[in-house]
Image (cartoon, rainbow, N blue to C red; front, side, top):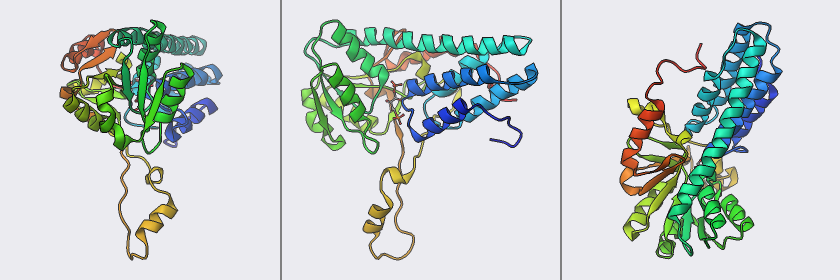
Length: 326
Ligand code: RUB
């Protein structure tokens, strides 16, 4: 935050801290929390004039924006809410932001429902899916398939280092889905037993590349080799508009302490002198479109190569700077 930034509401600081620490995680959930935090900032603002109010909202969006770089749902959420900010007076501006955030969150829920119904049509009674990480969009497809009366089983990859697979396993068990949890390295061995690889996305690039939890690309390559279809469940909130103009998606590098504790590191290093070894902890990777069979959105399912058509339709007319810039 720059020194001139106004003081932010505790919901914004709290949401920003929780997103950065992954207390709040997953692309859709992050987007939802960001919209909620902007609404709280607007509601509790004691700005004296419209300019001050607008500056406050822009600062709040910047604070949330800087938390994690990869999931485009976060800037897409902030853009949506701030573009809805309209009015001549502080009360009018406040009401417009609160309503815009409400509308965003409603649409997000609705998109996930609709996407789930479309994704469920790909799943047949008796199918087994293999999951990676924890994706609410992917789980929505399973939930809708269950509602259609289909029996679905799951092989759930643990997803080191943060083990989001445990969250997926817990959710599926709540729905009475038979679950087998496997360590990431065992995935290829179990691919012969599955009918679909089902994952979510943090961002989808204009060429149809899928950016998702690290390990997704290796899983997709193995699945292709075994002839298992790879289905990506990603509402249009995950489409990355900047990639239409050549920008790449930043892959978040997280703290090495998620991989090794200080004690473990010291143990490996032994009595070796000097700096020790490097630890890298990329949180996401890029799966090229040729390894993806279908991207399932709330607007229908798309082969990855044609997702750019949908992106042009949705973002084609958006030009100019970001709404959180001065
Ligand atoms: C989460 C992750 C999820 C996507 C999609 O990573 O990679 O697959 O965010 O999730 P992290 P959703 O745990 O590092 O946030 O479908 O819920 O948006």
